[in-house]
Image (tube, rainbow, N blue to C red; front, side, top):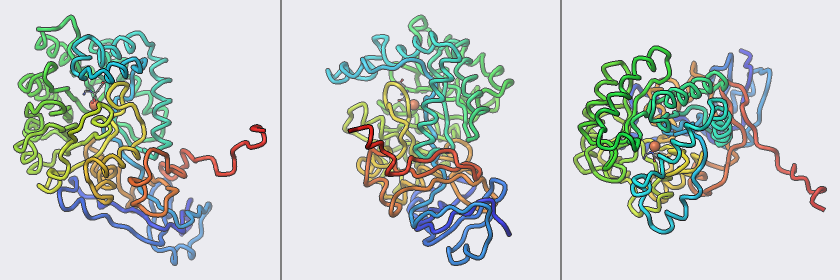
Length: 426
Ligand code: NIG
Ligand code: FE
């Protein structure tokens, strides 16, 4: 057997267990680690995984020495608002003055400010800007992710955002899942006419399906945005049209979004900072993945984080995501989220790795394709410049990626040390 690529001398090869459903509760504590390992790739697929001692017997067109460092599956980011116009650094001073997130929104800022910038941007401008952020995500180890619309709130701009995601799928050789979040906020002209707004957004579903512009439909179910009943009706329509479901659920107030997500068999319920005991119980009895976004809680300056320990201890499936967006969590770095999960959600390193790989893949309907390394599957992996898998949550806020591979091709590589231009500094 001759490999196209052989990555050998891997100190720890992280092998999350792939199954038809997400890992739940105690299962999340199991993380399979192969020490002194190697991976062989043929035609972009994992052809062989095994001990270093055997690797030396194979021939390969290209050999990469991992120098006893760590290799993991490509990370999966299952919740991002990647496509948007403008930025909102001017809101930081409002946050510092203690103005709550929903109050900024009620004053026409927040999401509505980004809606204006997104309406004013051309499709080309949005595409360029999203490409920039996407490449930064890849450089931080992500090879599969989800991107939502939701900064249009009118048919034209929502479709413009979704077309950008479709073009990103064509441009980049990585796996992107698209979500229609037309129900992200109530435009000022529809205040008091929320039902009418949702009816108009639902009218887009057929076109979105026909042109394959999104696989999932999401809604911001929250006080002052959309009620539980409005969310149920809207998502039910989407489900009947064949879309998978996701919900921005119980982020600020415990409205019952977790319960609704379990009831509708949504692939995920996201945020869940305020999820009730009943909501956590329903999630633990379902295969709906609790997608936790500790970066958002951190960035909004809240003290109360999602109750990850209770969720896992009661048997729920937990995943982690950046929630990358211009307002409530401005970072593309999923490694930072892994640190926050350790420090603020009290998740173990094993749970965290499962939450950013196999469970994150299940949270976007890609559980059978992404988030694991198994023979026959796409060779999407990251070579990390870390001594062991516990190191990422520990050393926070920086990029530990050495190189990123998708389908056996190197997508990104860090500049080697020693390349700083010392001479020009003199
Ligand atoms: O997931 N909570 C609602 N939506 C986004 C924030 C979007 C924004 O502030 O622009 C979130 O945090
Ligand atoms: Fe979000």
